[in-house]
Image 1 (cartoon, rainbow, N blue to C red):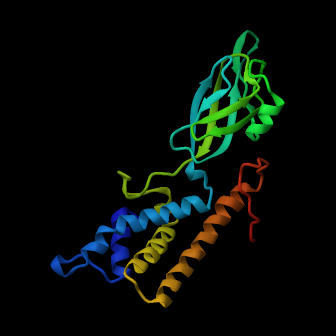
Image 2: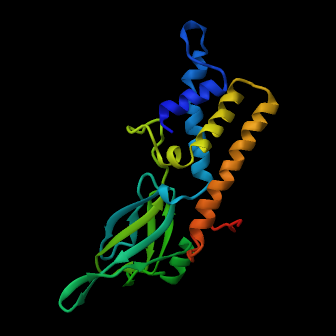
Image 3: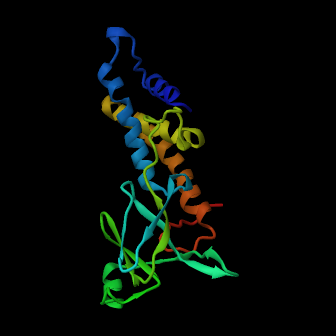
Length: 227
């Protein structure tokens, strides 16, 4: 489903079509808000592979802090990549760090000047990870994390993963938002909400269930799959 198809469907379902002065311009002007509110709800309710991002960076000798990407929501994994020599050829070796609280790292490594291979990380503040122990050499790092994906409202292609794979999630969610805006009948709002909840169950089964069957990392949500 494209953006144009979605906005047309919302107006047709709710019988609010933009036709000259006889239309409901305030409703039409808020359609993008209905869609984006729905996307936000979906993105905050389920962790899907399509919502993951990857970024490479580096940490330097003696510096236990690593900058967090500006669009960061939550961690999927963080790895330090030292250079080891195998047959005289530098070979990167991924060393995945374990997530701990700041107080754990501070207690385990009370002296930041004591350096070693990082084993743990924590979210120090909104902008920074804290590593423990403090890196003893420079490391490349690779962060996989969750971020809000691009909204279909802003997508140049007019489509997103959600609009292609689960278009009904966007449609039913936007209809709930739109009909509440119109102060519609409570019974019909509940019908739209029921449809949206049904699609969300399928999304959650996919993202937090089926995609987690072989997961062992505690940073991932994992729900039981209904067969």
